[in-house]
Image (cartoon, rainbow, N blue to C red; front, side):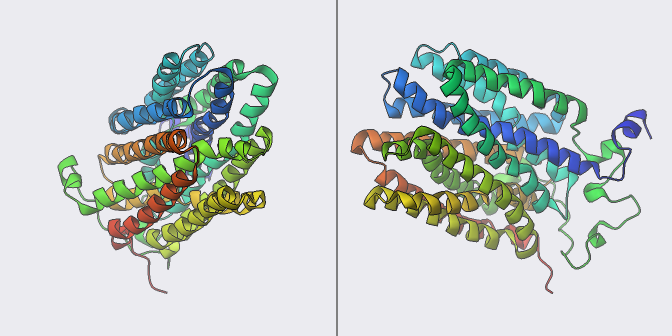
Length: 430
């Protein structure tokens, strides 16, 4: 065994869980920073005479950048490994956030946030860790994915209110610099020192099995053996119905989620809720989603991805309906079922995206395939962020935007059954 293996993996703790922990922290920064746009959005609208649509479109540009770069990042991780790609991305992300402190025009904001920051944040996102976690886990893939992506909610819970607090204390310019500094100080050393691509680099096997153990018997009574990996090529993936169904369900889910995420803080402020309370509501959505990302990942390992995802979509639709009722009847008490059910349902998305994609397409080009799926995330989220602002600018109301969110979330739930990862990853009858 090499000196590196002795130094890095000296305990009985499976090193894959360390990878999960790094993924959790990375995704906390990824989604916490992305979600904090809603807070900067309010502050910038107060300082500049920009419309809601054109300002929200900055987030859309960032998501389009993410969509374009996600397949490239996934493919580069397949070829070069994660430390080079993620480490470089952290440096670009910190630089982009620092540049945002000098924004004076909308064009500058589009460039610094929508392009530079977005390019960096793509490298620390779910696209990187989906390609890594698929190598480290087989039987516990749903649970491991759920724990890692719970960082999205944790980051939202901490970084959204923290951004609001810092903006109130220092202003939005210094707050951009502070966020960049946190990424650089906390995340960069963890990635450079500890991140590894595959368990074989440390003489390990998926799920912590030893070489003489039978992978299929590692968890008696939990799952049937998985189908042998297909030698996926890009052409074969494009010809598969499940590829397009999975891409569609991801795109529609993120469209609906980002209609709400980008605009609900401003909507709540418009209804008379103060800014800090609205930011805390966002934070609560995030922390609720964190716990349920773990829950949905664990549950899907037992009852199947399709059923778990459908249950999550029902919950998130209840949350959106509550938001519609706040708009219609003005009962602000409905903010409670909104953030509870939206948080529960939002929690099902990322772990099911990763687990279902790995069930269907794990192989030597999985990073590229999942990068394309994350392109769907970016396109759906970009359209959702923009279209809600566009609808408001035309109708002076978010009612039709929230109704659109409800419709596309229902469609996403149906498409999971078309993708049918359960046909590959069968649950053993008890």
